[in-house]
Amino acid sequence: MADNSGWILSRSIALELGLALYGASGRLPLSELPREMASLSLVVSEEWREAWEELFGPLRSTVPIPIVLAWLSDVLFEERYGPATRAMRELDLPTALARMTARAAEAGVKPDPDLSPGEQLVNLWEHTSAAVYGSVGMVKSAERHDPEVHHLAQLPRLLQGGDLHSRFWHLLDRFYYSTYRDWHAERVTETDALERHGLMELGAREHAANPPSLEWLPPQNPLVNKPGLHEAVSAGRMRVFFLVEPLGHYDVLILLPGLAITAFAQPGVLYRQLGAFAEDLSVRLKAVADPTRLRILRLIRHLDLDNTQIAAYLELARPTVSIHARQLREAGLIETLREGRKARHTVRPEAVRALFADLERFLDLPGDGA
Image (cartoon, rainbow, N blue to C red):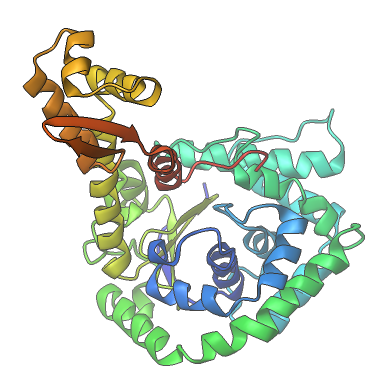
């Protein structure tokens, strides 16, 4: 068995670009992005976004294409755009499939001979990824609607000789040279400080052959809060690549055979904003989590009834109806108009739709066709 113990702390242009493309999509509200990534999203042109989405669909994949290309091109640890992308551009399907087959074998995965070479490549990635995550007690989706699967289905067409090769590299070059390079240069000081912090916590690089200390990572980091992964790293069965990046991520996790990739920024504002969003969403969901309030919403939507009439219809006490209506109103789902002692209510359809849209966004569910 290969020795996978130890750690690497470095930068990777392919990993940076993969994460940056996720934030550059413009599909997530700026309030849900790390501060650093939000600033990048603001300078990405809408014209570029539309061209990239036309090629790939929504940018929601957890392992974007540049990361897979770099891994198969043996330049995952390259910091410079030129050398990294030169190797990635030269990667053709026979070479990619041969390397993927060898690496899949490490996870006990074999190619399906009934598939075409391009289909084999994507199928091997899917099953290898699922096997690696499963080896540490984690479940990796391999469903066809998963955004990662949707994006990687394009992979054979992006390789040298593929029909999307030139178009893909034209768009990626535009993103790097017109947007990302200058944005990245402005954050060198912060990135250098992050690297020093990581090295201070991990110790000198000459100790990098040993399993890394994980206690310094924030509790939200997967290496801390995933018991199977924590044990695999501590026991030396999986090497860790601590990614030094300027994008402000604190919980990135990408697993490859024998390698766990994680970012290690502090949670900061994003984590607090996510908590506030969850609290607000919880209040609104509680308002519709009661069968009586759901029936009241239905009555309000279709019948012009005041509280007294609603109480009679549902065989409830009037004060009970008033309490339920107040909870619906405080959640923003209804409006109330008082006519003397009577209270009549109106459903706010846009608020009800927003509730379920926010739940879908909070859970980061894949979009239709993604």
